[in-house]
Length: 345
Image (cartoon, rainbow, N blue to C red; front, side, top):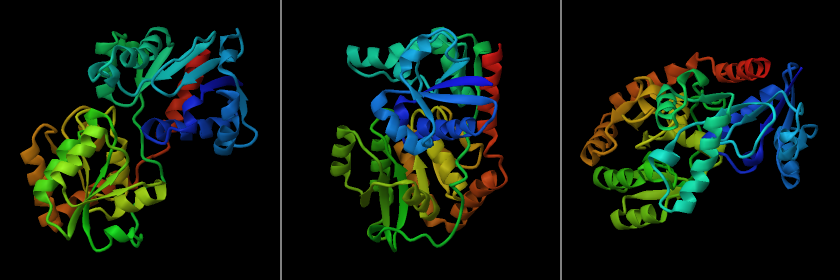
């Protein structure tokens, strides 16, 4: 039986792409007789972790990983290796935007970059989520490509097309463009805000912004003032928004994969995405791709799709069919096989 330790510190608060990728893998390992799983986290996080992964899950302080023979393998699922291990290690590095799009201050850059450099230098094996990210890791972090394995994420089976979802009152009777925001500059919120200000026709058309914007993008939203609503969405509401959006916009200049795009596609949403980074790889030809630097092209693409219901329906059908018969458990099986292979090397 393989003794698997998992860096679990970020599971308490991470509900974004990394957590969405990693959480089902931990659940699967806990139910796989090949593994005994120990979550490595502070004592104060044990209750929250047990509420997520089950009352009987073992939780130990990360310092236990430094003991020889404590674990056969330790998995770091959150883009970094934060402490030393005496065992073999598998590190998931989703992207290297901490280097290609670094924080402004020296201290902030060091805090972001140092754990990733440590991971790249010390990990037995690195797993990433796209061929694009694998190339970036090899180039920027100077990692031998033979140490890198690509496991493409798949949308959780929770995300699938279905009619009849009830929208929030402020979206009822509206055609809306959905943008799942983030404060990072690479999310390119300013572009979609300005493009929607140019393209949408109030009051029947509206931009729905889910998530947090940076202070700069908040100012941009006030300045350009497209018809819009702000929403906080749990997974149930997010799925409803994917299913009912006129289109979902993913204008990022950089994504290690693009989970928002594939979750939306799995729900049958027509998607406009950037033709940059891993988004073409993630969407596989079933989204409309636009240059993330070309404001006019984004405004034109939004207007064209809003006016052309047949084109929207065709994109939606292609998106839904891409995941209708897909093996969504494949990434989980691939990761469990990597745990075993790495532990036994």
